[in-house]
Amino acid sequence: MPPRDKQTQKTTRTESAPKKGAKKTQPQLAHKQTAQTQTTLVPGAQARYQSLSSVRLLSIMECLSRQHDYVRLTDLSAELKMTQPTLLRYLSALILTGYAFQEPGGGGYMLSRKVCAISSNLQTGVSLRSLAEPFLKQLSELLHLGVLLAIEMNGDVVYLDMLMSATSSMQTLLRIGKDAPIHSTASGKVLLSKHSETEIHAMIQEKGLPRLTEHTITDEKKLISEIMKVGKCGYALDNEECEIGHRCVSVPLYDYSGKIVAAISAFDDTDALTDTRIKEQVLPAMKKLSRQLSALLGWEEALQAHQDKGGTKCNT
Image 1 (cartoon, rainbow, N blue to C red):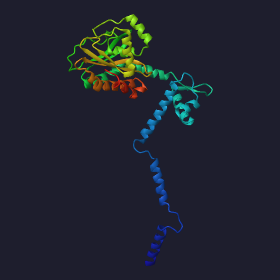
Image 2 (image 1 turned 90 degrees about the vertical axis):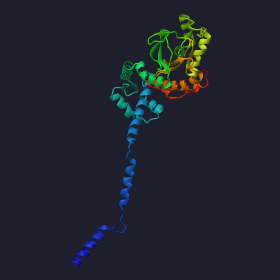
Image 3 (image 1 turned 180 degrees about the vertical axis):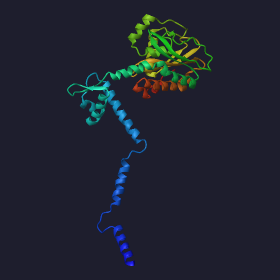
Image 4 (image 1 turned 180 degrees about the horizontal axis):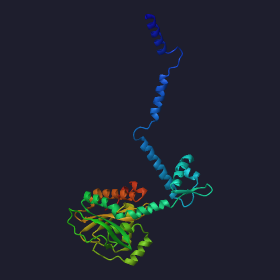
């Protein structure tokens, strides 16, 4: 028995001990495991990768949407700084789902009208009023001011929505759906700022500049000067020009094309809406809201803070 034990022990040692000159495999396996671990996506990385893919797809669609003809693969590659094989994968997906098609004969690419259908459904299904309503409520509660949403219609201001401040004692003549003179309101000045001087002159010739209060601007040159300030400062004021004792400040809303489509205004009596409060509290909040809403309407520049630059340089 003892000899058998020695043989067993010898065999065991021989099997467990590496031979001289033999390569050690364990470190190599560990190295492979480490490399595999490095290439495995950590929690959240896969979502970020998928998000990046979505951004690339959207950037391709945006690039195609800016063109009015077929776009060659080489031009897309140069514009978007993507390799052609990568672009082909995304373009194939767009073609497969019906959002793009290729020129017969293997030429350039173009978006289909299916994209327009989405835009049309969005504009039909979501009104500007319903989109702005929660923002207006938040602004009114934050500033304790009355707020309103206005658009231009037939050369007048039309109020789509309005919220009165619970703490304000002001009794306004403003009503939802009511027309207001465009020249004597802050929202009217904002909406006029999207027009050229020639167009503004034509509107004044048709509508006139009726005096509503002793502060109403009835001089065309002075009014145009006020309107031009909107582009520089990013807001307009109504200093008792529509109703005595009432003051109003307004900022523009932009759509995907950068066009002013509406105005957001905050109003109260003159004692509550002082120059200092407008500059330090009201305008920063209103311009932030303008950027948020304009971004929802598709205006990319709304994500930039350039509107805030003019506010401190313009006198209230």
